[in-house]
Image (cartoon, rainbow, N blue to C red; front, side, top):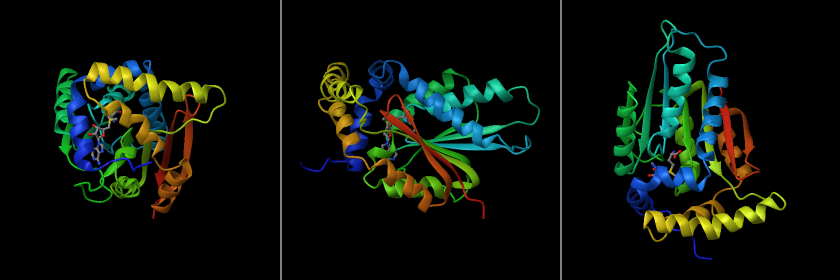
Length: 254
Ligand SMILES: C[S@@+](CC[C@H](N)C(=O)[O-])C[C@H]1O[C@@H](n2cnc3c(N)ncnc32)[C@H](O)[C@@H]1O
């Protein structure tokens, strides 16, 4: 099988072209589960981040491959619920993506929701324009598998996270669950690309999705990258019968 073309030019152009339909398709093709998955990611980040938190320390977060900014929106929803009226509590969020069309939609969404202290930066996730140890939490949802060099992507996520901070990666993986696995594979490889193509009018973006999942590193490889770069207690939660997983852990304090 020829290797999947994940060149940054191809991936950036493709996401740029499907950007206007991205949220709609993301929601419907996942049967509304995408939102729940992001909720789980943010809940697990909160669990680790606010365990021993001194309210006077501002929390800075970074979301890589942010797309239309949904991880940031979910982070702020939970933050407002818990800390909105807590004296001294403050947070700022940065979203990075290399597709400017996605970032434009993210900015609009953030404005519409009246969220403050949110900034978007156009950059490649494998070469982040931030100093080391800059953020308290670094997340990426459905972005890592699109990178030509996922190892370099993980290394950058960990580099910009402060010691004691949290790194979290949400990503699909081929499910091997009995009975459900083959049914899901049929949906993912045959039905989803068909609907995606009709709605987005893009000829292969939604064929690329299952291909990029099959082409991605194994679960153990991602866990090993995290450990190699200094994430202690790195673990993976399996979600929706193994369709995807959350890799998460804290950066070792030195
Ligand atoms: C499937 S979308 C996920 C968007 C969002 N995180 C979400 O939860 O819906 C993947 C996003 O990753 C971005 N992306 C892919 N590779 C990237 C890279 N190397 N650097 C920055 N952004 C990248 C794409 O432009 C796209 O917006």
